[in-house]
Length: 303
Ligand SMILES: [Zn+2]
Image (cartoon, rainbow, N blue to C red; front, top):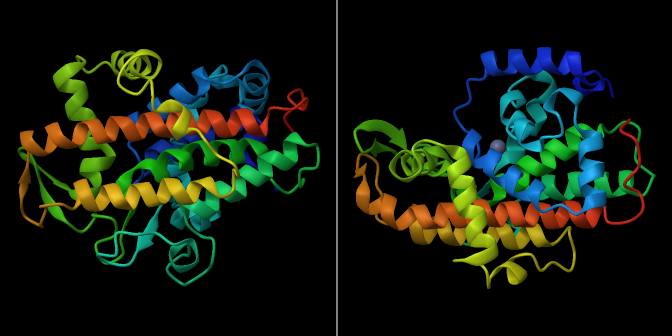
């Protein structure tokens, strides 16, 4: 498959155009959420997997995966990538507050596996085959890495596994403090931006530092091993999606109707959930990449 990633010059061009063209009503974690997830993950990679990941990145990002973690949101409405649009989320039955792969993982036309859980499985197995030296030449492994890294982030955003009729909160219009927003966007971005403004002097590095401190030596120290436990890489995303819809019901939708104004109280009680999900996404992405590239295949050159 011809790809923009074959030359980094082309990618810079394509990436630039993508930024200009992106009018995306339904995204995933905001740029900030994806950057945090990917930076946390990349910092936890073992030597071999870290090397393999760097090999797959275009030169101009200088080994920094997080620079391109938002890329799948920027290209999803391009003709060539329109098929990836349903891969960012899962629509579950209204009020069910549960997720079942066979029932829910499909696009709006009923095409099976076309959801964020199916996408994670697909790109995980593409990268596994690549790592084993048996990749399908039609697949672009740089794209597979970027999609996987992005979708592991998205599946942790609770409102990305939301109710069908309100499109994961997108149609629930409301106010976030003084400006207009919607419930989905509150979870994608508003809470993160408010946290940055209130506590971190708008500095993403400081927020990242704080999250990482709490992984090694704080709030989440005792939870890490259970969060990253996974017997079967292709089955574990089911759990992440189930966690998300449960959180969406308990904290996302709870007490929220169209037209309300959400402010301090909602922010104070939901912000810890958002931060925990970003960190869980990062830890689990690291676990997946460490497992995929754990063998002696790390030196496979990018193709
Ligand atoms: Zn997304």
